[in-house]
Image 1 (cartoon, rainbow, N blue to C red):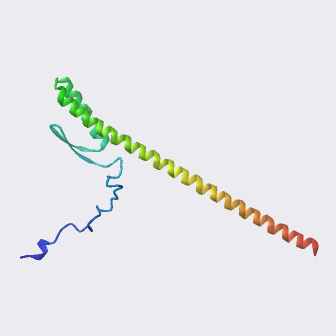
Image 2: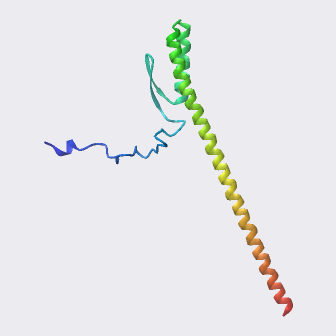
Image 3: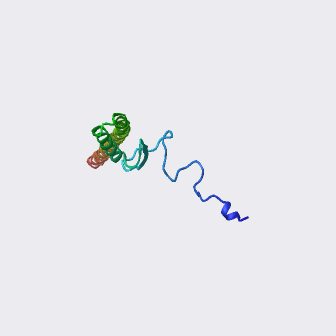
Length: 135
């Protein structure tokens, strides 16, 4: 028996997924994330935006051919990816807002430090002027 062949080829430590961090067991929301979708009658692969557009088009095609049941299934799949897109957009907006708040706080702290340094410099120059005047 060849021991090397029995060894697992997956060299990642158990419990991680190749450096991708999952938050609460969910896939991180990334606009470029590629989904594999097993929709009704078809298997589609692409980003959430691409899948949304594809299922919308499939739904329209099914409607025009008179298959209302299949059309509804395609439209439900499109709605699912529409919701994913909305969640991605909300997460991106929230992250941007947090970055802006963090930047504003760091700027305010920097300005406060500068003002304190100026006060200290003004106080030390006044003390040196008083010392010169009294001498």
